[in-house]
Length: 152
Image (tube, rainbow, N blue to C red; front, side, top):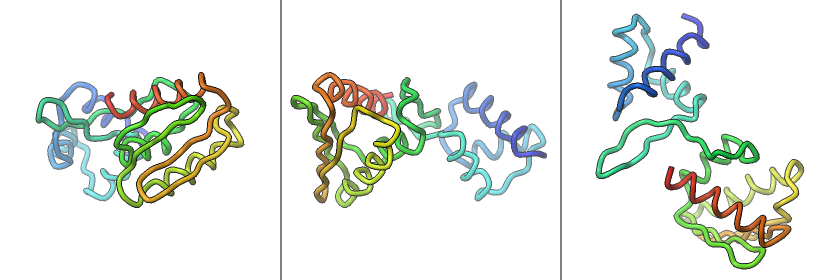
């Protein structure tokens, strides 16, 4: 089966079912005649920006969306996987990350500067990232986007 067709089937399954494990997803794919290895399924999940969300003690697969096309899918994944909290102060955004991940996120944001006018630069420590925005409004919007990604 071609990859595009398999991705469409995965989208449909994740949209219509509460899937909690890759094995469960793999089993539902097999019921539809789609045989896939765990490694291929992992790549497909990443390609489709599928993440594991937590709600009331349950975890399940869902699509990662920010509602803002300015934030690319790789950056959304970084926010989701690394960020603990975000708070705007004036034209600055203070982002707390998992230990050792602030510089990774800073590099990803710096890579976005060519296509964005709202981010002027970043300064990273071990677990804290300071994002310098063009205005207070830009800082508030970026903070809201990060919180939306974190909370779904």
